[in-house]
Image 1 (cartoon, rainbow, N blue to C red):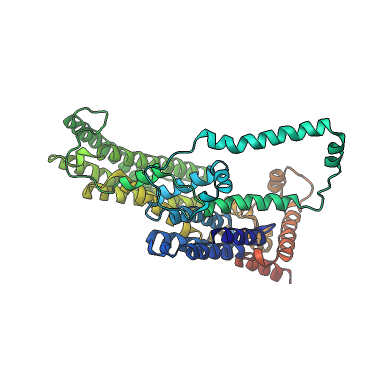
Image 2: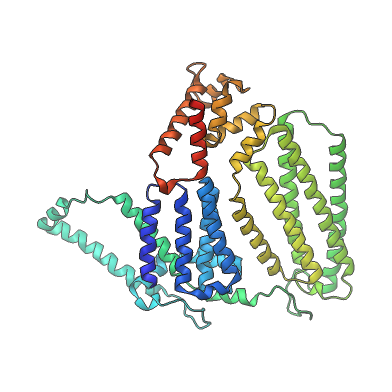
Length: 491
């Protein structure tokens, strides 16, 4: 059954994606993959994690159909990697699933030969056992050695036998499309790795043994740079106390600057935002790691740890204020210089960092383990990626920037959006603040005052030609909308 589905999946892969772009083909293939897994083993429907990831596969496929962008494809591939390993180990947490799935695909050239030439390896996957033996170098040599010997004798016979050499030279394989052969071979490797995931028992056992909660009793074997718990407690108090005072000074200075400071040039805004936000987010990540170290075990269980907890929670609260200042900085930057993908990304980074602070607070108050924090935040990262594919960010950027007064940076960024901004550029290019000299410098060509107009027309014709020549497999709603808008402007 699995072999038949692998063959059907390969046929669907070649038919839907060979010489095609991102579109409805991603959705059709996603539905087929999810349905094939359910047909192989309906028990996966009992796993909530599997159902959520499977829904993510379909959702990113819908996003690819709507927008046809790389973000939707990235989300779809990530979800498929997770789905492949969750099918093998439904009990695994998401982060271990990601590492196991990635490792399975990475080691496919090594373990794939074992499975292809040993039919017993192709039996349905079962839960990894503790006594599973690791693969040896000898198991690799038993496949590599015959191939090496075959290649050596092939060249020996060519050199020693003129008849055989002439026969090889006269072979004509022009009728074969080598690009398709390579595409199909690559697709076979990917799909084979998907349906035949390699189990990694050590990772699986590590995941099962790593609990979200911490035991209530003191662990005498806990490792750390402090040999005695009371010394670590004193160090924690001093660390969080001094960091709170330092962060308070930073926040007060930032608030004072926001109320009284003035920025005039876009470069000032860029420096103010980029340096401020990057440093702030980095400091918050370091703060989380400091908390993870001190609250990794025994410090949570001591009777006199309330003061340390209060200082740590105060530091988290002040870091949340720092995040709010980052939001204000980014908002100010956008209001002055326009919306871009990176500035949207800043909001996403801030949101993920806020989730990290919230889960860190839960860890301290409910005495959770560090693995709890890692698992929860990996879920938030994955779901953020999936749901971000449902938004047409190019259109959001264009609509936002077109409502405000034109500036050099706004229009230059619209120009960088290429296909997505073609209708707006074609409609308003004569009113843009950038001079033709600027575009001449950008393209390193100085021909005439009409250089940008000619370049824009070339881009429009290229987009329309590609749309008209594409078939239904590459169809997506966004490209159709742009094509219709461009044709409407020609009337």
